[in-house]
Image 1: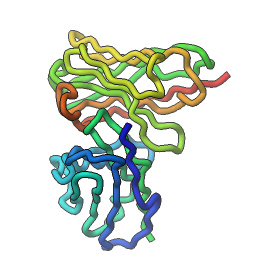
Image 2: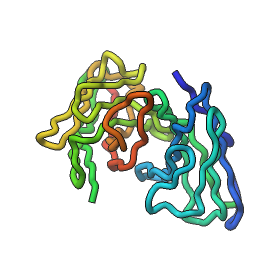
Image 3: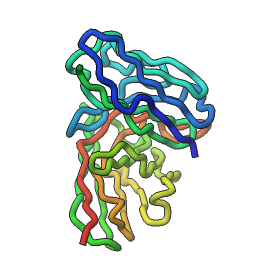
Image 4: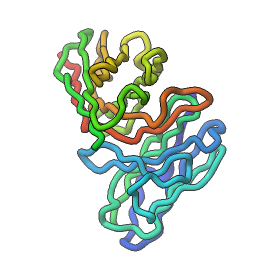
Length: 106
Length: 124
């Protein structure tokens, strides 16, 4: 099974900061990686797929990069509406989620 | 507008059974794979099971293999999850989600639309 490890587990930043979340796969998954945003009490929302493709309707403040085993999600300028937990997901071999990164406002 | 709506969550005793349903609308249900994902209270997301567009291929996480069965009725645009031999650790909100592809081949696909979830509580 492919394991996904995110870091950090919690991130505290100021409005306007550039924020980066890292996701590592236990083996190569090419570019078969997605990022989701989940706000409290809500369903997850697809942000990025194929490692770097922005889902329709998602703010261009979000971007993804990486391939193989190392991936990043970047929020270019953190906004209050971005407060959420972010999950990476591999879909190279069925599906596995990372453990999540909670983003807070400092 | 794409919508998926889960139902069937309940309080059930350990060892019991439950059947979840997911009614889909706003897209051609029979041309997309579907999946179930769960989230235990205060925990992260865990993929549970998936099914191909036509229903001939099913996929399960090791944690539920042999206990859960996924199925679909394309004539009624409905996805199901039959859960047997339930355990306390199966307690979670169960989400139904639409997969962006038809089936897994050399790779699978991400999930683009999710329901709001249905709560399953396994407790005596």
